[in-house]
Length: 248
Image (cartoon, rainbow, N blue to C red; front, side, top):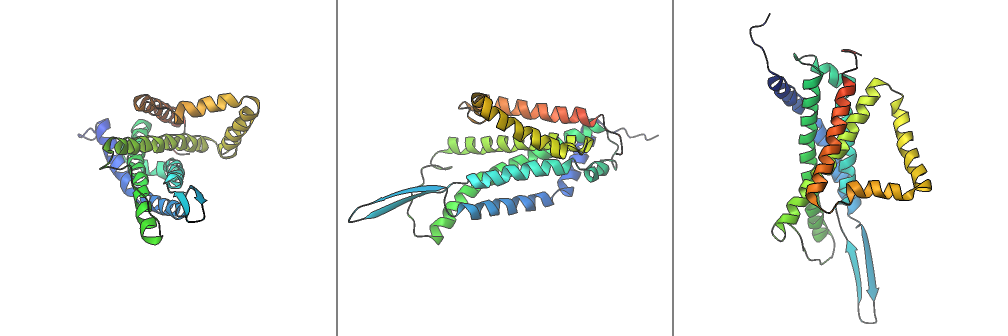
């Protein structure tokens, strides 16, 4: 019997640091996904133009929206990866339980969300620099850290919350798949089928659900909603994982 009794916080801390080292390669995939999003964004996200006999003007819109989409996809897949069987078996090298493992996983995904969300927003400024030096364009910058610091930081925090939301969905999805492989096919069919069915029979409900999450204008309410939904998903995944065998 060991004379040293580790507390839950000590175990979580060790598992968290281990996961940072074990899944360090996920940050390389993040860089690749965001770089891919930048490549797709170089053509612009939209534009308009008009001309006369003396001049012609064309306005193109550049944004990091494509980078955000790729970042959300990366967050979803990373959360699934951390629930894989090999990752669960790695936890057996620690004196731990399901609670400490799920807490460490949640902390890891919060960390990846902070890195992914921040880098996604900053990629928008990198996109401006690239287009400035690679094309004959003239544009003005009306937002940013120096011009509007409040909006800049709110944008970063909001993006981090979005990435965390997709991470929590991925964590729940990955946990369900580990319980039964049928969810690999069943869940996408249910989600897509529900959106199609509601879009046909009750389009207003789809809009209400979408607006409830993605169209909140008050940041504090948005924070409460995303943290609440993410917390429920993490808690649900943790509860389901407790029903799994120690080695399955």
